[in-house]
Amino acid sequence: MSIFAAVKFNIMKQQKTIVTILLNILFCAALLWFFSRNAILRPFLGSRAKEVFSGLLLLATLYANYYLFYPKLYRGHTSLYWFSVVIACLAAGGLELALGYTFISKCNVVLISEVGPFNYFATTLLFIVFRNLAFNLFAYVLRERKQLQQSLETESKVVYQYARMLDVCDDQNNCQHIPIDKVFYCKKNGNETGIHTVEGIKYTRYCTIKYLEQHLGDKEFIRVSSSVIVPFQYIASCDGKAVTLKNLFRSEASLSFPLDAKRAPQIAAAIDEYLHADIEEKNELQIEGEEEKGKRGPSVPPKEKLDAVLNYIKEHPGCRSTELIFHTSYSQTTMDRCLFELKKKGLIEYTGSKKRGGYFILNS
Image 1 (cartoon, rainbow, N blue to C red):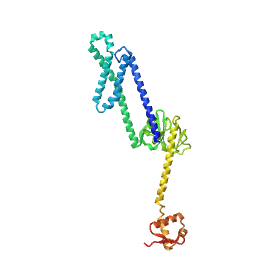
Image 2 (image 1 turned 60 degrees about the horizontal axis):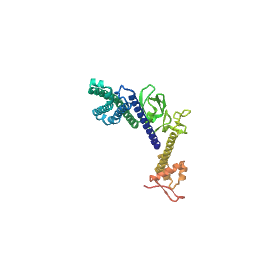
Image 3 (image 1 turned 180 degrees about the horizontal axis):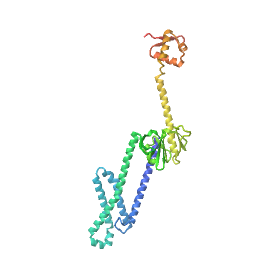
Image 4 (image 1 turned 135 degrees about the vertical axis):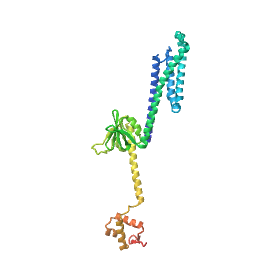
């Protein structure tokens, strides 16, 4: 089970990494295409290569903000964080103007001569810096949202791990918490996920089945299809194509859910491993119970039976167990337990050979 969970986690992590890389590449391509087509948010540079380079400078500030400035500075040094972002935007704007200076000086000689070179470049640089700052707000908002989501997930994991409660809504849309141990199965239906309990009550949780799978974990629950999660403890059998739950409600037919076609072998293997482990654990507990019972010896008979056997031995010294069974009408097992307990307490002893000996009261 643990090996399967580790392999599954690594595959999911690799898939998530690949998707993240592709999304970043798509974002970069879209921004560069936007800069190469749009002359409103940048000075006219007169060259497609220079326009793409100006977009790369903006991307550098965005990724520096997202991966460097925010994680390192924002929580502990807010003022230093914003100062670093402004400096990065100013540096990127200066490089962008330096790149397009030659072309600008040739095409806008009249304009520069009228407003002055300093005023022209100062105005343009101010425009570029504010543009870069506006774009960096997206990086800030995305990072804040991710930070908030991570905090909520951490708190949710603590609740699930220690309190073992699941927050759900009842049929009247009132929020409440139910123990995770009472969850019979979870099934997604549209935009909501139905939480069915062992008591036959259905609750609702407005979340994706993947989100619920991550929070319930893979130690006690398993996702058998794209819309169903079931706990291991309520699985009755699995034939490789469908999983059948235990009939808790004494209905005519047990609940059965088809396995996901792509992951059917892995799901069936995990369920089979759990069921075999459960059987082995029960056998070990049974063996341990029998061993413990053997160590404790036979159970103690009632006091009236012990007194009856003891009184008969007092009245008939040297009697044997067959004689005691005949006169008391006790079974062989009951008589053996009575004699064992009386000898254990030191009240009687067996004297003589096996053929002619008998039980006598000890003088103590």
